Length: 151
Image (cartoon, rainbow, N blue to C red; front, side, top):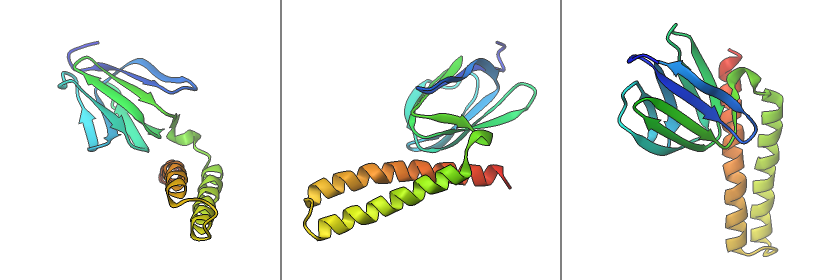
């Protein structure tokens, strides 16, 4: 590792996508907005939003990874991403993501109807709808990333 690089690690519960890779820059979707980290960056920790993150290697190759939440720790000599799930942009199955989004949209509609009919309480309905909306947001991020890749 030189003064112009730092190490990147990207880990999800399923696998270790990137391990101690020297990079010159990392961009990620933080909860307060997207950010770019460079070697020597001031340390910080933030949560991740479902979206594409990217990294640039010393030979200027750029790779993108879809993260669907989690945390990122930025230190002067390394960036560590602990993602809820992560996959390289080319690995995303667009049809599967579209089916999942449709199922989740249908589920939200059904839950709202159940609340309207009094079959479940408003509080219970709101909690369940929020859970489904979080998963829907992840599916929509996958769809957006897959469509961007397939252009």
